[in-house]
Amino acid sequence: MHVLFVHKNFPAQFGHVAAHLVERLGWGCSFVSETEPGTVAGIRKIQYRPHGGATEQTHYFARTFENAVAHAHGVYEALEPLRGELRPDLVVGHSGFGSTLFLHELWPDVPIVGYFEYFYRPHGSDLDFRPDFPALEEDVLRSRARNAMILLDLEECRGGYSPTHWQRSLCPEAYRAKIQVVHDGVDTQVWHPREKVAARATLGLDPDARVVTYVSRGLESMRGFDVFMRAAKRICESDPRAVCLVVGEDRVAYGGDLKRVGGTSFKEHVLAQDDYDLGRIRFLGQIPPATLAQVLCAGDVHVYLTVPFVLSWSLLDAMACGCAVLASDTEPVREVVRHGENGILVDFFDHEGLAAAALDVLANPPAYAHLGKAATETVRSTYSLDVTVPQLVELYHDLTAG
Image (cartoon, rainbow, N blue to C red; front, side, top):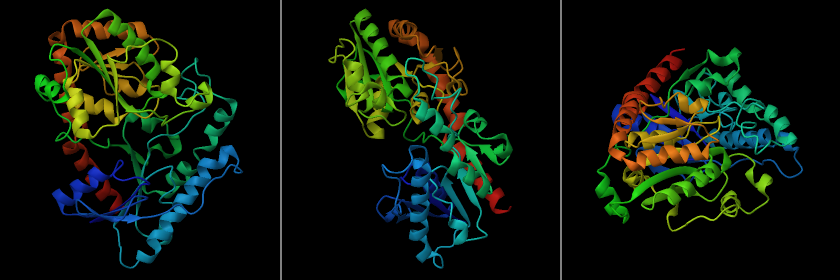
């Protein structure tokens, strides 16, 4: 079996899956992306460049689609010279980027599998969840047009999968039967519990500190960065031993924060709203996975906040590391975190309630250790690569067989 993975980035959602297929099953895997060509973990990497793309003259509502077409054309141009040499049994691509749209012109009989991560909605969604950040009319209207390429992918693919039931439920009912639920998978060789004292020693933390962790790819409102900061201030004022470790880049990965706040970054906007003790609320930036695993294991409580949107890998990574998790009581989170069993759910907007819950944990971390143990078991039994890769293999076989 040879699988061709297509994603603008590498490794993204597919790199670790491809590596497992190569190493454990002896499959052949190629990966088309914008990153440099070569061979990584037995995976052949092929580089493409988008063919054109949206400009300022492109209608705002159509830019997502025009960019997706540019990627689809670029993927086609990169693979067309290889059509005789490269003969995949299956193509797997991330829907929405348009990466696989033209590939049936190269391999008419090869099934395409779509990874359907998110279907945009103007209402009852990430766009209008926060009344303190009301959506602009242009973004509400644009959200209806953003699904154009996803709809083409739904029509073109033989089948697909979404990482959670909630994310699958967002897709149109007419296509939902084509989509199974299989998570990307958590590599428990990387994300697993470590001894707290040793982790703190590695990071140079006081062994007697009370450590709160927060992780987000970008420091933004979609992931409740501003809510967390208000809670962190309250935590540090109430417990002199408390230290908050914030992992993430000073950028906005999702949403329109910069249009709302008019500043150079959402982080700067939030910090300007109050006085924060940045000696105890420490920003670590983007760090390698091995270091992040040490940070998570050094903590006493981990905070994860999100509006109704794509569920972050960081939540499951933290759970795999045995963290006592405080998470927002929002739809994607409730699928994974069961209140009082493997974590604690709190109202997204209630920073005082979040701070109070965190202080309860910090006052007696051993009393909440059972949450971390249950969280680790949740990941191992449902979301680990040992569970999800066989599910993907079965899906790939089924779709290849038609």
